[in-house]
Length: 373
Image (cartoon, rainbow, N blue to C red; front, side, top):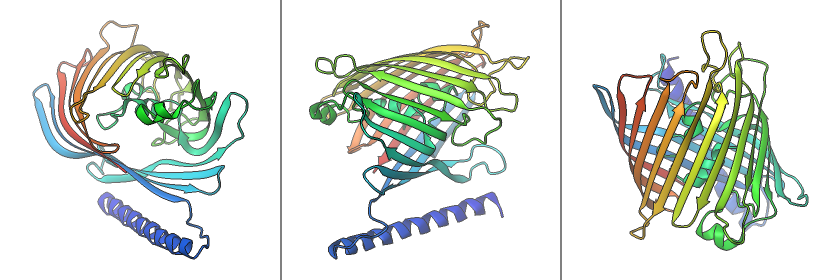
């Protein structure tokens, strides 16, 4: 069976699953009218799609194309107030190998989540087991709100991934921030004094096969020091300790400090990273030892009064090998965002990359649409 036929068959199966869900939803409505319960109660379907038109220029090479950057279809199930589950399909276009150009379907999340009892300052503690969240990227993505443009700083330079096979504990600290803040600014990670997340994972990420016996320990601590006076100010610390995902298992260690100021009309973040190695185990020298790396990123977004038009910008500086002087990457991103409906939006942006490792400058001009339901 060809890769295209196989991908098509998977989409047919996904379509059948969707039809089953719709049929089940109808049964749920009918059953509710008869005041009876069904196994499909508590089901919820969500989706997120990134569609774009891009013009890319790398040196003398030009490319322009309409593309599917990413697509997610999620099925959520609530069994009880304490036990829930989620399955998320990750839809993307294969960029290499014999199947280059095929639309691929794989699993992004597939976990059980169990809500534990509250303990003093630890509020809404939960355990995720399976193909679960990792502590950092979901936190940052929900804050910036422009994942449709591209990956976040640490993922862009292959430090870590957003999901992995393992187990994660997370909780809010000190109850929840006030409803006014959640409604006007953000309801994501609404701990009054911050939040915490820590997990143990295979380490290679949700799209990788485990290549060694090592496990990765990763944790995040976020503190909201003045919730009554400056609720939008948060300080975060992220750390990871493990091995790169190869048989040779080079070191993979990192520490990131993150400072953010969030308001209904603006957001500003500053991030500093230092570490060694990368998630794939490829950031190594000629002897197989992990390379020392560091970098920083600054992000800002302002929401104008004109139709909630957003203006955003980002600056990255990343040194892929601190022992050499010619290994720096510098990136500028500027753009506009226009809301369509609720969380759905259109963005126009320009991504500029200057690299000491290449003899040319890379530029991307893009119009992208995020469909979120």
